[in-house]
Length: 431
Image 1 (cartoon, rainbow, N blue to C red):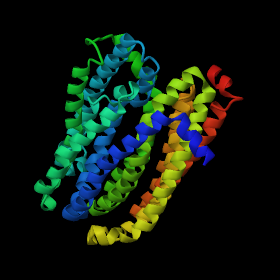
Image 2 (cartoon, rainbow, N blue to C red):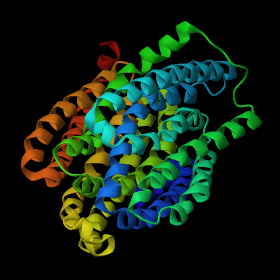
Image 3 (cartoon, rainbow, N blue to C red):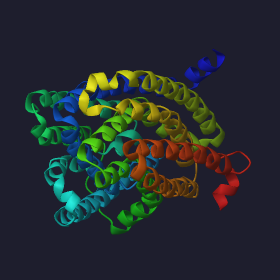
Image 4 (cartoon, rainbow, N blue to C red):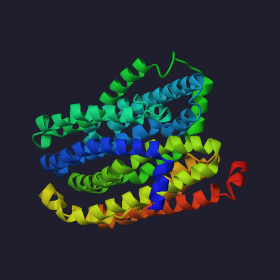
């Protein structure tokens, strides 16, 4: 009880923001949780397989365009809140960098869609998912997080979902309507971008456009280690679905994609609001006092561990009813959910010590630790997935994901101790 009172006293504003965001995230996740069973039932394993594959592939384009700016730009803006010119400089440099990356990656994707046979099979599903890329490019989540307007961002995202996702019940009536399902879900991101840009213009958060080739290149260089980390992470968050697409049928892809999405929806619904509220705060504290930042991180760790444990229990127990709810196309999904039910603990552990430890508290040099963990994890993931999938198919993918996330969680903790620990922090700074 004393520990709980201490956490609340030290982090009242951040906890209020987190509670607010979790409430908003609850609405954000509640709609998909109502809609997901409907889509899984109407589209069946094959129809949902098209949607799941397309979203997993397009996530790679989003990954390249984001390029780690959600971490690096957020931290920079959070540490220069009193300097409007500096915020404007960072904002426009990142916007130009993301715009260039968007054009290059879209062109490359369109070429691949015409020459790779598997991509041709999913051609129209991919096309109808592309609004997601445009939306995420121009939503500027990193700016809103950096200036402490995460509540406003949550409201805009919720409004977009309330406007668009209910339309799925009117336009998706049979298996062949999977393109409508892809379009409406991806359009949420585009709608959020439009609303957030209107809000940005009205509030005058940024000033007149600014362009400097040197600044754009500098932002790309600064975010590159984080991009490598994200790219490595995507091997087991997105590529497992893509690999399954090459090894097995569309309905099996849909079954695994559904289990993975349920697990990540629960994790993101809890962890993302905490990250959005505490990452800027820990970044600011680290600039003033590393010990204060570490204390706050320890308090966040306690909250995350408790929340993720609840999610693990809910997934393990709730898996028994999954097949009855989702229908005959998803026979066997309960095994996948039980296997993945232990994953949230490791995801939370890695997120706290990685994002809020090595990135928010650490120096630029500590990014190497963060990057190296995910690069090694990528090698581990590839080794596991090509070992298990040929023999165990979707269950092999689930086991591979669990083992990879376990490695990341442990490795982030060890890296944090090596780099941010009191006795080695100065050494890490000077490496």
